[in-house]
Image (cartoon, rainbow, N blue to C red; front, side, top):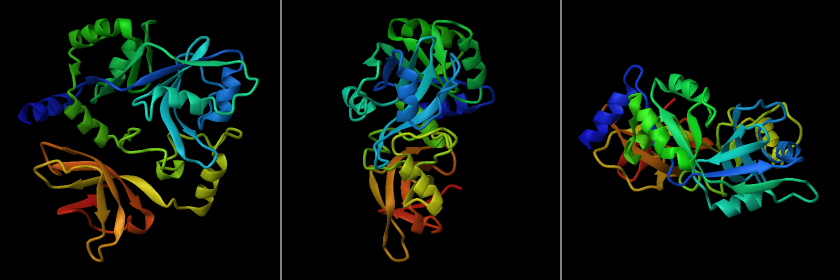
Length: 296
C-alpha cells in the first residue's frame, strides 16, 4: 500500500502527470453519410457542429431515460469515435442499443482496434496538448485514443516525458477523486440519466434525442430520485462494494456505496455512491460499521 500511496502523491504533486490504459475499454467507429444526423438524434450531446479532433462526453439512453452507455465522442475527419471506458454489458450490446432505431439510415458502427488511455494529475492538460499536435493520436480533455498497434510506442513516449504509469489501485484513487462513474461498477441499465450530474453529459440546446422527455421532466421537478455523490470517511480497509447505505438515526435505506479506495491522507477512505434525495441532507450515512459523509 505504501508504494501505491507514494505513486499517488508523486503524480498528484505540482505538474505531476500519470497515465492508465483502460483494460475493458471499447472504441466504436460510426461512419457513413447519415452518421452525424443519426447520432445527433440518438445521444444526449450536441455533435452537429463538432469540429475535427473535438470531443464531448455523452450518454446513450433508452426511451425511458435509462442509461445504455456512457462514452466520449471524438470527431474525426470522416467518422465519429465513441470511446467507452468500460464496455457494459458488452461491445455488441452497446452497438445494438446504439443502432436500435436505425431504419434506412446509411451508417455503420463497428468495434475498432483502438486503445483508450486516461491522463491524471495536474500536468495532464500540457501532456494532452502535446499529443494532440501529433496526427496519430486523438485527444480528449483527459483521455487519449490511439491504435492498439501503436500503444507500446505511445507508452514509451509518455514515460520518456516522465509520465508515470498508474496501477489499477492508483487510478481508482484518481477516478473516485474526479467523481467519474464506470459502467457496470457504478452505473447500470437500472440507472436513469438524472441520477448523474447532467451538465457535462447533456446538451440542453439541441433538438430531440432518445430519452429527452425523462431528462426534461426531471429538470422540471427540480430534484432526481437519487444522485451520484462523493463520499468520505475513515477506514483502514476498503469495504466490499456495492454496500447498502443507511441513515444511522432511523436505519432507513439511503442508497448504495458503489466504489471505494484508500488514501494516504485524511479522509483515508473516499468513494462514489448513489444517495436518495431524501437523505442528501443527512450529516452522516452508514455502510455497515463504516461512517461516511457526503463531500460537498
